[in-house]
Length: 222
Figure (cartoon, rainbow, N blue to C red):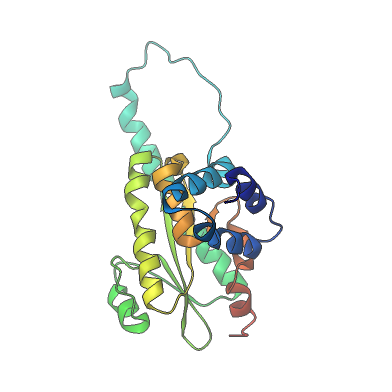
């Protein structure tokens, strides 16, 4: 059995995303089921958490501020800036690369079921297809700042992975933001597992277009 730190280092040091994906796909073959959560958690801490956690400094809380006085304005500000930043960026990147996709919304859920035979509800945020209209990938976005919520939402990728296996194995992607994903053992780690490492943050999202099968789709080779 390989040393976990050695495995993680090999994945982190991989020069290309496709190489990284292949190495991550080998993890279940190299480790027993009981060790898998630890392997994915360590990989998450080493490779992905640094992209999520900002530098910060401690600021002494002024005594004149009470939580009740600032909580509502904070929530309003967060709601105003949260928006669909991940979805909008994914859409921009896919469109610029010439990769066909459907962005899911409240009005086209039935269309996605009929066209791609995807039964997961809600449908993934993005369905990627080739020039022939064949399903080639599913991508889900989540901006979460609470660890418990991240843990609860991680199951969406498990559902998508099971769906993909039923549909012939199109890859599943994740676009993540927010400090909730720094919870690695039962949140970010399982997402990495279900996506075989095809997990991107705002920092790395532009690199997604280099991951198979997206380059071939963009070049209209498939």
